[in-house]
Amino acid sequence: MGVTSVRLQPEIENPLENLSKKLDRSKNYLINQAIKEFLERRAIDDQRWVEAIEAIDSVKSGKSVDEKAVNDWLDSWGSENELEPPKR
Image (cartoon, rainbow, N blue to C red):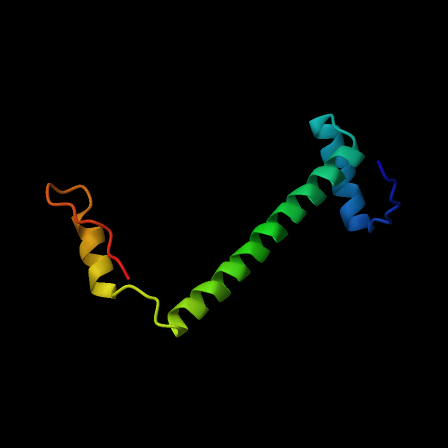
């Protein structure tokens, strides 16, 4: 496990200290949890970006589904005549 030194500004240090006491957790634990959550969110954001680019490329190349077909399919959900998902 690596050791990293971080200088915290008072507007972060003071609430962190209070939260540490309130939760009976170390500041180290809270900082590690915050960084872990931040990195997980960044990974999700990065994946969404990749998927958005893929979707744009797909539409540009004509690989899309007709809007009316999608809406008809969605409107049929839960009915006796539920439609099959539309195809490209």
